[in-house]
Amino acid sequence: MNTATLHRRSANGYLLLEVVLAMGIFALAATGFSIALQKSADASDMAAREMQVTRILQSSLDEAISIPNLEEGEFSQKLEERSMEIVTRYEKMEEIENKDGQLLQEMWRITVTAYFMQGNTQLNRSAVTWRYGRLYQP
Image (cartoon, rainbow, N blue to C red; front, side):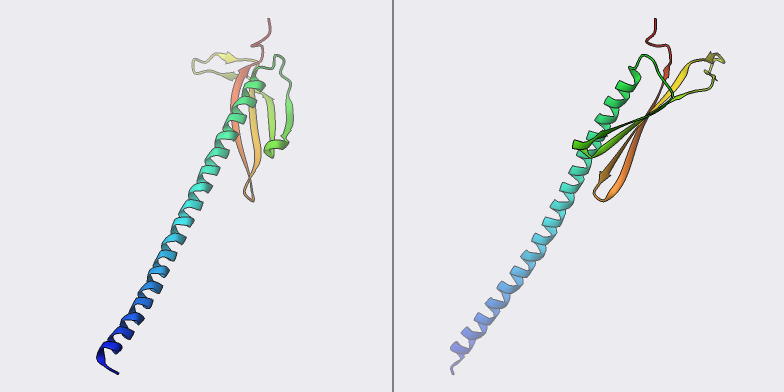
């Protein structure tokens, strides 16, 4: 065997090794990129879900505030299409004072809580406000 044939065979072996190493490096980079892309999509989905819950809470709170005659109690509403439950609680507050020492009578605390699933975890978010009881009465 002459040296030219031996040199060509060893060069072919190096070329195959270089191709295998390049494919391995590409596979690692592609795996890292796909994991980063999946995490980005999960974060986007979570942010969209949080915005949806915030809008639903705000809407439910607006609806709860606009009721003319308030009654103490807790009311539940299921949103099947959103896989969510909205619980609205009306609590009459004891007479409290404002910062000037004036008594505030007929004050109500309205709490709206949304219960929902995020992945396999049950989560809840709440919104709270106060309202004067005779706000919509003549």
